[in-house]
Length: 529
Image 1 (cartoon, rainbow, N blue to C red):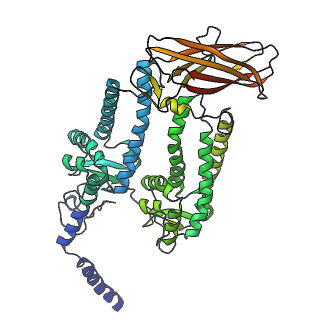
Image 2 (cartoon, rainbow, N blue to C red; image 1 turned 45 degrees about the horizontal axis):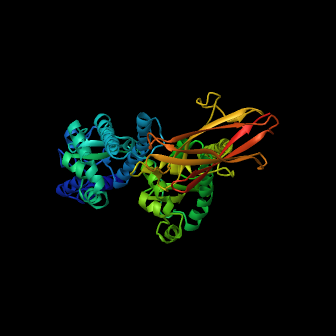
Image 3 (tube, rainbow, N blue to C red; image 1 turned 180 degrees about the vertical axis):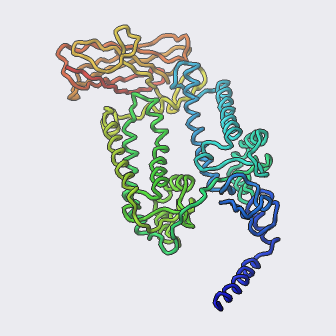
């Protein structure tokens, strides 16, 4: 009984000690610094982030946020969501550009629009960008980037942002992007509500919805050593390299649009590799092998924002400066860890990443198997990257079409049927068959609306021996009605009845006599028995 009485006497004293740590005014001041929402009570039990409702607390004693787990988005989350949105719009720009070229000129591979077309196209695209943000935030209160990072747009009163506020904050967005380096980030860092200029003027804030409960792992004293970080990075680098190299096998200069988008999407494939592993398993292939796990600095599981920032800045890890940082930092953090706010710690292995290992190996093997089917991949002698110069083309004055490298281009090469117009479905022929093929030539010089193009043709057998060679098989020297339109050349080639099966190579050599420029192109076709 005495012990019980002592216990009862101690409990009030303990409660008094904890409540005396901060006065009501001091507590209110701290809350005002961490939340933009007005509070209806100065009661000490009010918290910034509401994780659960307490039946004993009245509605007047809680912050007026209808959702649970809401708090101001960090700069890391804002940066990650912004990167995803800009990446999406960047890819949409190329899709829109090719669609614009196809709609107006029925040709995707054209120079960038110039003059009035440049104003029209870029103006329409900027309008589309504004509509993307306005519709996404006005209807769903989020964008694709904000969705992945669990962010939403609210008013400073704690309610979903109005259409007028969304329209205003996105109208100011170009100014925020122009001032991105200093003023925008300074505002977001110094203002208590982390607002950019558009947020400040429209009275909006960006909030993050966090999981109601997260299992944290111990971090103190369990961070991985720098040696283990480097050793675990070796299998990670090898796996990512194998994945990217397999994707690159699909690049084919005879499919320039497809190959161009493969090159454009290589960064996305790289990011996906890291995002899937780190978001699903909270580790990587190499880290799982060495019994390591990724966590936030406070021990919570990492989310999309942390995984994305780690992947984006991992390039800074693979250099001597990154290795030195890993050894000298207090928590053995690489530059990407410092930016993402993560650490790598020792943790017990689980069986779930085994699924990731099996799927990753199968995926890499499948990509390599499919990529090797391409007869013009980078492991063959027929690999070329000249299609890039065909896409990045500019127009110069005087009706002359020149590339960025001032040379000839071959576009839209295709094998034709006997009517010499319809593209042939495949480049496979029989002995004795007649081959028709055509291509467009651009980038040639024009003098007084006149062009002079010559073509030499060589055919190599499967054993690389020369089976046919003729110089000046085409000699085009005449006036052009429209000098900016590509010049179409059609060739005819008869296979001998005893042609041996295998892959034959067409070698085209073009000469621009006015500019003294030359171009060599190679195409392959198959002769089957």
